[in-house]
Length: 176
Image: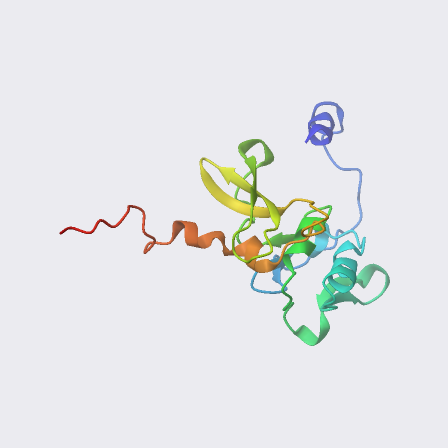
């Protein structure tokens, strides 16, 4: 990050903040695919608006007010949405992360390969993030005529079959 590099070279070596920083347990599982780091959240509401307006699933919301406000699910219920992965992609600060990609690679270690999702007949435009030749995550690419830039959780998280132990890697030859 250029800002981080500049702060490290020209910035102060220690913090000027002398108050008590808020800390929370890390990470908090909102669902089986989405994790939350509460101290990173800046309360921008992008995730809640994406969940409610785009997916039509208002499963996550702000709980509390003022400094005790945080993202959560109603009554501890899981964030069960077919489009929960989109909230991870729209989070500007990395407060929401996916369980499959969390701390798997740094931005300078990855390559993004444009491709098309083949897990359903829609054919959403995606980009596969690879590191050392292995797919680490799938992100949506904007194609307004096909998918409007959104991707279902099946297309986003179901790439684990690529590395399944029982996957056929060589053609099966019929011997007569």
